[in-house]
Length: 222
Image 1 (cartoon, rainbow, N blue to C red):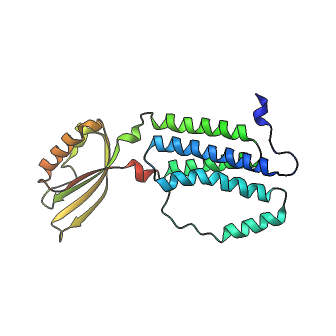
Image 2 (image 1 turned 90 degrees about the vertical axis):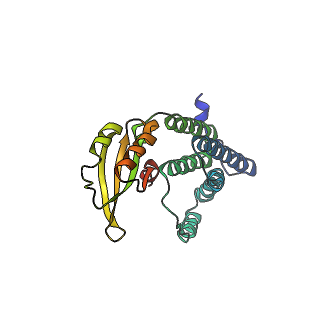
Image 3 (image 1 turned 135 degrees about the vertical axis):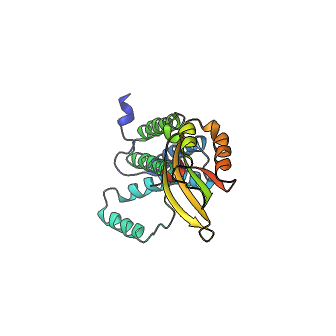
């Protein structure tokens, strides 16, 4: 069992050991990509990146290992790259760190350990994604009301009936001041009763626009 902590790299790097490290790194990336694709919908390009990233990391570390000059050159090359993208989701960032760690382990020659770590981490991600959590019931509620409606307490009874907690986040005027647009953060008691909740709200706000949005996606950005 302790053999998984033994490195396959000994002495100088050979073609065979290099290819073996790349194969293990790619396998770790494929396992992580498969786990993420089963956990939720992910783009094809992101899944491909998860497979390729540990291979790239392994190659970079193998190049730098024991060579200060190469390390400085690689650092200078990567400093020229600027990443301009939207903030990533927490799960995506976790998956990237997972495959990078696996790539580092493969570069050090600990191939079995890298595969074991990837399987365990991917399994934990899948398990936790299937556990019911209170944040799954958190939502953003957007309600439009006429100026004649006193909105500060107009929906208190409905919030008490359908939500565990609620708070007004933002209120702004619209349509030359004839309408108010209200933004609430709420936690539903029963997500299955969302339609009944919306029906009750539209009877109260004069059948004006109402939107109920999943609030968990925006809240998990890093």
